[in-house]
Length: 76
Image 1 (tube, rainbow, N blue to C red):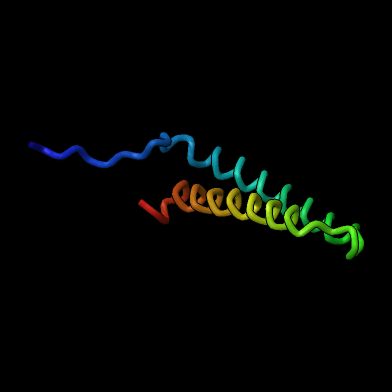
Image 2: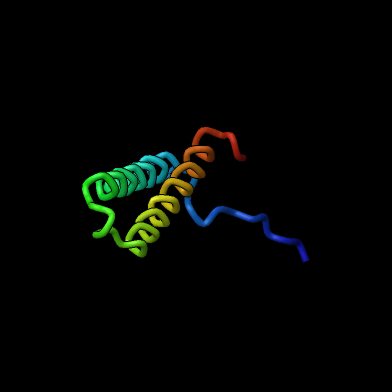
């Protein structure tokens, strides 16, 4: 039995678009996190909202960075 080569579930042509899209979403969520931190008082802050917002921003920035590295050819 010949093994099949591993292929990406996402077409290679989509890498630049996905990088721009995910990095943009991640930066918008990060900006909203900083605005929330700067405008809310210490008594009105919600730890769960901060953790969720930070996690969402982290996921989008992480995958956006990964697709950016794939699009530029750093990872082959």
